[in-house]
Image (cartoon, rainbow, N blue to C red; front, side, top):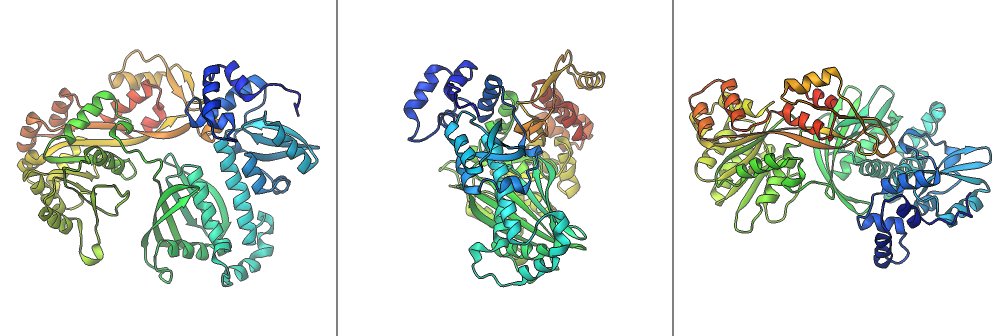
Amino acid sequence: MPKSNPKRLGDVLVEEGVVTEDDINEVLRRREKGEKIGEALIRFGYCTDSQIVDALSDSLGIKRVNLGMIFVDDHVLKLLDEDFVTKAKIMPINITGRRLVIATNDPLDFPTLENVRLKTGMNVETVLATKNDIETAIARYYGFTKTLKSLGIEAEKEKQEHEKFYEELISEPEADASESPIIQLVNQILLTAVKAEASDIHIDPTDIEFKIRYRIDGVLTTERMLPKVVLPKLISRIKVMSHMDITDTRNPQDGRIKTVIEGRPVDLRISTLPTVRGEKAVMRVLDLTRDSKGIDRLGLNETEQQRFMKLIKRPNGIVLVSGPTGSGKTTSLYACLDQLNDPEDNIITVEDPVEIELEGINQVNVNPDIDFTFANALRSILRQDPDIMMIGEIRDVDTAQISVKAALTGHLVLSTIHTNSAVKTIGRLVDMGIDPFLVASSLSGIVAQRLVRKVCPVCAKTETPSENEQEIFEKNGFENIKKVKRAVGCSSCNNKGYKGRTAVFEILDVNERIARMISNNEKEYDILDAAREDGTRLLVEAGLDKVRQGTTTVEEILKLGLD
């Protein structure tokens, strides 16, 4: 262990050009008592955790690792307890001879390294990882290991020996609910999901086990496989938390959980579904501290943002956001509401369910069980003198007709609809039974959108486009594209090559010319040609522009299946 190394973290960051001496002095003056310089630099926005780790790796020659790709054995975890590693922000990962390899984001924290040596009696070798990776690994290994052991779940080879014990354990009454292993397991599943920034948690039964899977950046990844005997108790706990009927295992149920995880407010939407192998549960995770609010955070370029704002600033008419499930339509609607939220306006929403509660906006949940549908709710809302109405989805002719009526009588109506492109939405409304001239008179604009993964900025490689990619670019009007980004994979993106998502948009402004064509029931492709002449850019063109900018890759755009 390099105890004699005189360097300090601040010195390394200045040498590597990450920050300046003035930055260090400013942070030293402003940081809280006992706060480490690295944490303060990140908190004040002078650099990122990843930049610090890279600088240390380059300067000190210490290897950076991806904790998501490393398996840690139980005998390594036993050397240091959870409280110590959580406080020290380190993660033991391996033993080689008499050396304990630990991951840290500060290899110059010699007191902590010496403490590890004294606790374990072993020499200490350091590797580098970001603070977030370390915290995620601690939650994943220490939390799950402790919880699973309390359930009697140990190594794969020991499962059969303990099957009887599982059954006895989960059938026993819980003396202290706060210490129940099942409650600990649910809490651990939620904590890991929030740490990994997952949008959904899937609990899927198989023949002899069940899977815990997380959807991260739109992709499902299996986290754990657990014995199926635990599943009924786990599902029951989730039902209790979301106020469902725990005795009903034969019907689908929906629920909601509001909780706080590590100081972060989280809203969970729960859905259970009976399958032939047992009950399946899906939990949609809404981390309210991460949700994008403003229109400027949706991923629109300057021109698109101006066109979007033009649509929602009109005093009346219908603005529809279209796309398949999971394409970010609701996020866009909430961004519109945030933009339009004004004390002088009466804004009312009808949703199924209300996803995020907004201050100053009247939000209504539909309830089909008492025949309080979208259509019935809208009839009541029209008697409430609204200025702006947001409808969760136009899914039937009644809702569509009332929306048209509201738009024609001076209201701004925002809603979503399931169509593949902006121009196809027109045909969808006509197919529902709305007369073309009413569609033309009421429709203000349509925004079609999709979500694509953003290439990881840490590990992305810049390369020359392949011949096939060049053909795709040229076919869609992009010439002389010399460089594109390639997804690689590193510890920062959990070896996926992508981190985060952004949206691509197709914005159709229903101007007088387009409205006349709709009223005359002209062909879809003629309307599309007119829209493109007016500046509408197709989804595939918007996607390839993101590729040109280095935001995403051609592979991501091709996955969308756009023409």
